[in-house]
Structures are given as C-alpha cells and as structure tokens.
Length: 314
Ligand SMILES: C[S@@+](CC[C@H](N)C(=O)[O-])C[C@H]1O[C@@H](n2cnc3c(N)ncnc32)[C@H](O)[C@@H]1O
Image 1 (spheres, rainbow, N blue to C red):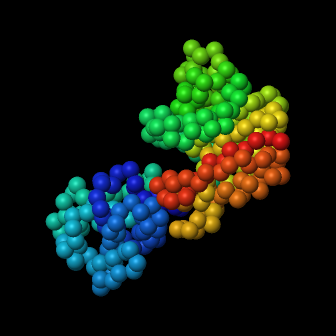
Image 2 (cartoon, protein in one colour):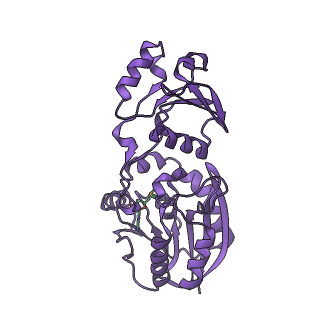
Image 3 (cartoon, rainbow, N blue to C red):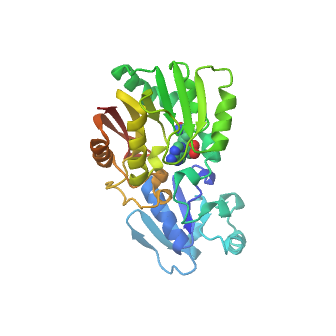
C-alpha cells in the first residue's frame, strides 16, 4: 500500500507538522521534500524523545508540540487517526489544524497502468487550465513549426479540454482515449462539431487508419507512461502518421532526476511522473522511425520534471 500525502486538503501554510513517524509518516516526509510544498517540515509522535534536525526536517517530542507555530497537523495513520485526533484535541490543539487521512489516500500497489486509473478528479480539476497551458506550451510550438493541421489526433484526450481548442484550428480532429466515459463525454462536448470524431482506444492500439494523420499531440497523459507503453505507442504513432508528419508529446523527465530517485510505480513519484526521460524518448524515436526535432525540458512543480518532444516521421 502507498499512502499519498493529502495535498488537496492541507491549508496553505509555510510549514507542516506530520504526526506519526511510522511508514506513512516517512513516506509523507519524502513527498513533502520532493514537492517542496512548505519550507518547514516537523515530525512528531509519542516515541520521539528529543528534538533533532535532519536536513530540512525537525523531529520533535509530542510534549513540545505547543511550542511550534500553529501549522496544519497531518495525522499519518489511518488505523489510529481517531485516537490521535482525540489526544491532540485534549492537549488543546485547534480542531481546524488537524487533517486526517481517509481510504482515498491509500493506493493499491498493483494499480500501475494509467489506462486503468480513475481520472475523474483530474478531469474536473484540470478543466479551467486549458487555455493557459495551450498558450504557454503548445501554441508557441505550433507557430514555430507551422504543423499541418489537416488530419489531427489528440492522443489520450481525456474529456477533451485541449481538443476543444484544437477543434477550432484543425480541419479534422480525432480524439482517442482508453476511457469509455471520457470518450462519451467528448462525443457530447463536440456534438455540434462536424470536424471532431471521438473514439475509444485500446492501451496499445490506436483506432486510426495507417498513414492517415498529419499531426499528433498528447498533453499531460504520457507523463505517466512507462518505457514499455511509450515504445508500443510510438510504433502506433509511426503507423498512423504520414511521412513527414509531426507529433508533439508531453512526457516525463523524472528518470535520473537530480532531486529524487524515480520509482518504477509512477504513482509514487512527484506529480505521478513515470520513470522515463528525454533520453529514453530519443532512444525509442531512433528505432521507431522518428527524428527528434527538439526537446524542451519543463519545470512542473519541480525543476526539469517534464519534457515536450517534437518528433517527425521519417
Ligand atoms: C491525466 S489524463 C489527461 C487527459 C487530457 N490529455 C488532458 O490534458 O486533460 C490521462 C488520460 O490518459 C488516458 N490514457 C491512459 N492510458 C492510455 C492509453 N494507453 N491510450 C489512450 N489513453 C490513455 C486516460 O484514460 C486519461 O484520460
């Protein structure tokens, strides 16, 4: 089991106190350090008997908790969450400072594949960042390379937030995604657009004719794909693109990162990035019939976490 730090529910503060120095607490410390969410990180529990500093982390005995600033306290236990909450309340800690875990934060180790993950929370949260992300990353590349937008594929389109913008620029746009729910949503979203077709995809097979596509883009999806999936998908891109056709692919650059060691399980890494990087993309391209035209290394919460590769079919 992997326990995700409750990023969405911790109020803004320049520090966080983690209560519980067990496996969950240790995992939270790693996630806090990797994401640099706060400048001060404290950890406390009954077993810590003296104050000590280890790098950015301060270990502090529970009895000294009242001496710390009133940062949010994240209870790093599912099993004993209620008990810890009661004890802290009895010590006079304000209930509003306490954040407890629920089962949503406990992730099954076996859920490795991005196509079997439930992206509904993402779809809701990401909507609203569409224009900003398009203007910051995709539009400058489109202006620079002047891609042929006659037959376009949005690979792993989700609920079509970026496709909405590309539908205004493309003669024909095919949206593909492995999620039936996302594709049904796209079908409704684009019901009035004659130039948009939405299709359910298999994880390693794209339902588009060979040599029929002039341009592929994929945004904020392949960042979670491992080497093997990208290898398979690049073969599919090579099959469906016409000679000279371009693809703009947003993917992970977490493997070999300067600030953390990427885990093979993408869900354990900062921003759920996969253990993959710009060099891996180069390698796969060279054996799948692509020329890498350019690679832009991007900061995504963390410096140099992502990459956009612009590739062209030979
Ligand atoms: C984080 S969402 C991004 C969606 C969209 N690109 C966006 O920016 O809103 C990742 C999407 O990738 C899809 N996906 C995962 N694996 C896939 C695969 N092998 N082929 C096609 N879609 C896939 C998921 O169903 C999900 O909709």
